[in-house]
Length: 132
Image (cartoon, rainbow, N blue to C red):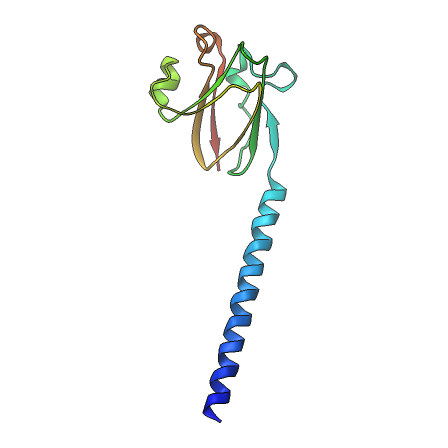
């Protein structure tokens, strides 16, 4: 009799674990469905003067930034350091994007992007984004 109770308890525990995992998967999928894709610079794309484009927008971890630009004439460097962002230097970049249609999923916190082509960043081809 004690053996039967033990098996029932194990089966119930397995069912509970499976249900919890399914619930977590549903929550994850709901979060992905809630994410928003933003085209940086709107209809002008990733170009000089986009510096203030993020102003007034609320970004969340999981949102996606789409950088559109003419391939081979621009790039997008994702930086780790605010001082590099301010100085338009690429000493600490995490990723370099060069396709002309790049998608970057935001993580929570601050992320900095600059155009690494000389003169572009200093002409406003850079953005700082904070995702909640």
